[in-house]
Image (cartoon, rainbow, N blue to C red; front, side, top):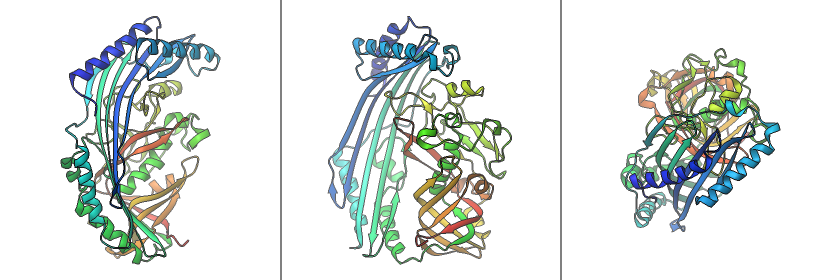
Length: 485
C-alpha cells in the first residue's frame, strides 16, 4: 500500500505546486492529484485466486480559456506531462467555447484549506488475508448442496490533493474496507444464494472484520440460510404490508431518492445513459416526497461510511444537509457547478471516481434518519405482511419512477408475529406513492450503515463509492410477488 503521513502530503504538494506554477497564466484553474492503491484477494470453493492489485497516480487539470472551462487528465506527473495536459485542456476549452453551458466567471471558486483523514490503521499481509478467507470458506462448506461459495476482501488506500486558483488547498486520505461473502445452494432444481457485505471506511484487518461480524459464524449462518431457502415456499403474490431491513433500504434509498435528486440528471445531462428524473426544479420546497416520517440527510461527515470526506472534488466544503425533511423535498444533489447553472444552493457532491474523469453530481452518504419504533413494535403493527432482507435484483425506469426490487429472503408476518421463511420475495411500486406509504421508521437500535462501492453513472462510466444508512422501515399496502409469477 501507499505510504501515508507527512511524507506523502509533501510529495503530493510538490506535484500540485508544479502544476499550479504552470497554470498561473490562467485566471481560472484547479488541479486534483490522486495516488491510489487497491488490493483484491478472493477464495472460491476453497481455491485462492491470484491477488489483483491496482495502482494509480494521476492528475486532473481544469482551466478556463476563451471564456470557457475544460479538463484534461494525465498519468504523467512530470513537468512535461503536466504541460501537455494543460495544453490539451486549453485547446479543448477554446474549441468548444461556442457550446459552453455557462461563463467561466460562473464556475465554482474554492477557497477552503485543510486536511481530512478517514479512520486508518495497519492492514493485513497476504498470508493473513488468505488464512482469514479460507476459514470463512470452510465455514460455508457444510453440505454438498452448497454448490458455490466465495469470500472476497478488497482494500483501498486513496490520497488526494486539490488546489484552486481562488486559494483552496486540500489534502484528504481515505482507507476503505470492502469485504464480501456469498454461498449458493442448489438441490438440482433451483438455486438460492445468501450474501453478506458490510462495507465501511477504515483499514481492512482482523479487528475491523470481526467488528463487522465478517466471521466464520456469519459464514455458517448464510450457508445455512441458503439451504433453508431451498425448502421455503414462494413469496405470496398480492397487496400487503412490507417491512424492509436496512440492507434493502440501502437499495431503495439509492435508486428512488439518491439518483432522482441528482441535479445534473434533473437538468438533462444523464438522459442518454441512465435516464433523467421525474423531479422538476419547481418541486423543491413544495413536493411531498413521502410521509412526515421521511427525513433524508446528505452527510459526507458521518464517520465510517463509504463516502465520507471533508471536501468534494471541486473543493466545496461538506456539511450535513437535509434533502427531504418531514416528507417535503428540500434540496437537490447538486455540486457547485450544477447549482450555478440552475440558480440553486450547492451541496458538496461533485465527485470523480478518479482524476481520469471530470466531476459530476453524485451521491455521497445519503441516509434515512431514525424514528422512534422498535423492530418488535413495527412487526406488532402488521396483521399480514412480509419482512424482506438483502437486495438481490433491481429495475427502475428512465425517470426513476416505476421500480421492481427483489430480495434474497423474506419471512411472513401474521397477526403481529414473525412466521416462516419465504423465497424469492419481490415488490414493486412507484416512487412517490411508495414513500407516501411509509408508516413507521425504526429507532437508532435498528439503524445500520451500508452502501455500495460500485455506483455507476456518466459516460464514460464512473464507478464510485456511495454510503447509505437506514433503520428498519414499515410500508403499507405494497404489491408483492414471488419467483413463479
